[in-house]
Length: 541
Image 1 (cartoon, rainbow, N blue to C red):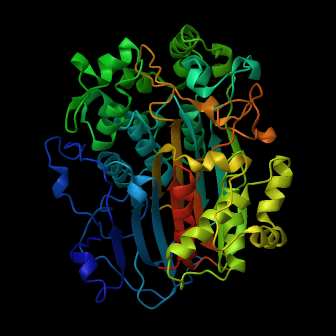
Image 2 (tube, rainbow, N blue to C red):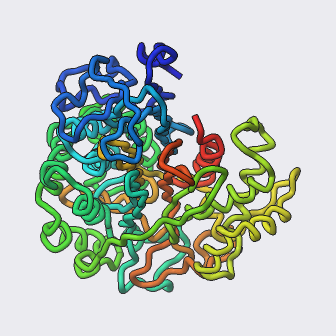
Image 3 (cartoon, helix red, strand yellow):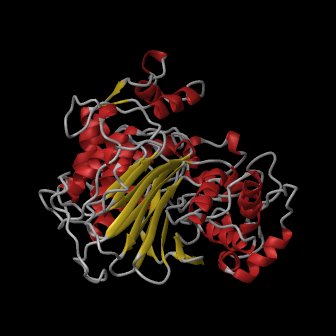
């Protein structure tokens, strides 16, 4: 834990903003603020103030503009007492931002805060807020930036999901842009995952169309402006982070295309942390616009590359892709409403786990000891362990307090139970790009995007787009040699979205606008879900 001067003065000031842990990634040494600036010396904390959107003084650090008010907090222009915390958990698999709004005599505006997996992307996102962009604009820029600097994790060749909560309207939307199976993909084409052709792993990439749809709903700046900021990173180049360098080293011994080797293994050597990498072709993809990706030259490139590697994805599949806007799945826990994406996301497992732990009387006052970790692990196995139920039945079961008591009785306090069906997908930690933004427009945004596995399918198009391995999220007979059960609800079907471990989460006060707001983003998997559960149990700072 580290704190700035502002943190140390918190007891004397009418506001609080702390930053716990930082991104484990290597700073890339450049930003839009100053190309030669050493990012390692940037302050970890930014004092928070809320000004009118687009205010030129948004990043003004002086305290002279702070005011006191006794106005009703339900007013759009009401000042708010705010406590915000940014957190990076479990070596980067989960991030969180906490905003606490309280009534009181000394109240202060907040201008926003951003958390992402990479410092440069966080800075770009902060700049979007500085330039009058919305919280969603800022999240889009950061998500696209992560697809550039962390091509092993996410990018336009993948998909994801975004939660947006409007504090004033008390309304949350789920914007799902997770990929779908090709229309001509059949289960009999699939075999043991170790022998599966790379092209058959690729689903329709939804990220770019999904972020564009989110912008159409919540954007303030132009789409071209928001995208250009991330494209500039690809065009100008960046220093390879420790995470990217380690990912390259992990796959360097595998059978990889020449294009992959030229990009990440020049002269046969894996890029080292701090190496300089440009992605000019990827910058052109971002700048070319949405229609060129889904209906033009780039969709043809994707089809050609996938089919050359044994896949069946077509231009028609890409062109027909649609974004889903849905209501979140909600669960009441203590004084909070937990909001997660609906199936096929595994987010409902979080609510199920909290329901069960509620029966066990675990709460924020309990110490998170080894016994608690055991209970959480067992809860996760029970929460999605009904292989014969439909998705509707599954959702009812995991949200039911009565069902939570039934599942609780199956848990052994001293022995570990075997995992069933869907929970197998939670046992392997997945890779994801994670962004959380809370801006001056009273929007809270949480995004998780992914290629699936490390570098996705390992297929790279001529324009530098790394393609996903989405199909590996489906279940099919003999997928792995150790597989005992095949989840019927997650079987491969044309145009279907598979079970997704991505779990952006928003926690809001249950009864009124005043209280703690928590936004988390996670790559999914048992480890990060466990962290989210524990963070939610202690949601009040």
